[in-house]
Length: 224
Figure 1 (cartoon, rainbow, N blue to C red):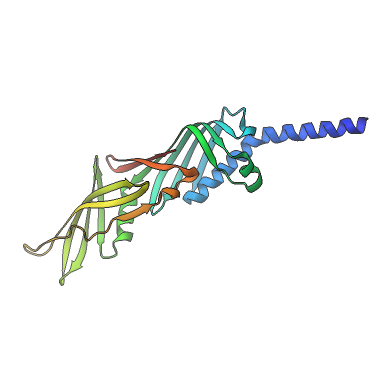
Figure 2 (figure 1 turned 45 degrees about the horizontal axis):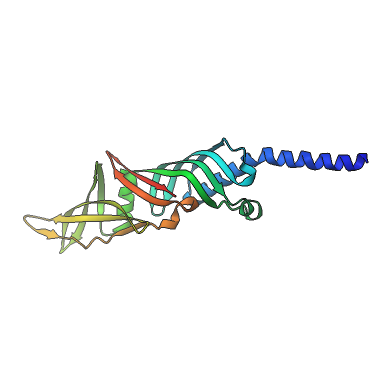
């Protein structure tokens, strides 16, 4: 009898230990998923208010991802917040895969600075050099140099980020180039739209929702 009681007690203790350890396990899994998806240098995450975590429910989640990427663009900082999130517990336990199935609220907010936009433009237009970027509220101004017809032209692009069918693009609304003397070229349409990130690029099935240009930075938000 005492052996059976000991076995039952051991099972109860093991189950209890597993339940208490679950928040740490899930936190590590979400942290790893964010790091893998964004190639981030640093990820910090906190899970709180989750008495039903064993059933795949997270009461509240807060996280910060630093020095990562979304598609082709470098993101200085990403913040992740969520309440009453639900995920597939079976997939977590069997495949160590975190699949978000629903949430009362979940939002990811990314900060893209002028240096990141400069790198994006430089990498997307191999004929441009000396690229400089200035972000103003509502617009992104890019200046660069390019060679054509045996001379150097000063190029000015006005544009910004936009969301099309869930994908994130950088588009130039107008392009102007001025060379020596009075030589002026119209280059509208010659700088192709840059597909920055597909909708499926974001973690946990989140989708791009808004883009806002402020002083010196562009703010991206995504949700579900």
